[in-house]
Image (tube, rainbow, N blue to C red; front, side, top):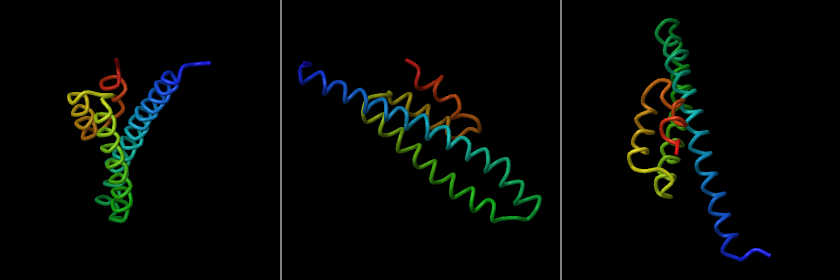
Length: 109
């Protein structure tokens, strides 16, 4: 039978892995939504006159961006990433294709 403190340590590790997984997942979807907004919705608005595309894609992207920023904060608050890496993750979210480098630049050990 394992000592009680080992189970608590394992639960913390699982919770930390979930938080990092949320950061990766939210970064991926935020990056996809940003590209859809820039490469699909914006051309539809300005070339075809369909402004509804930006409204829909922009709303979805906004929600996913908030999810990503909250995920960054949770990982930073849990000391899973440093302030420097949290700031880098935020800056990557402002660049097209930036969040696709999240794993390599921020989450590496």
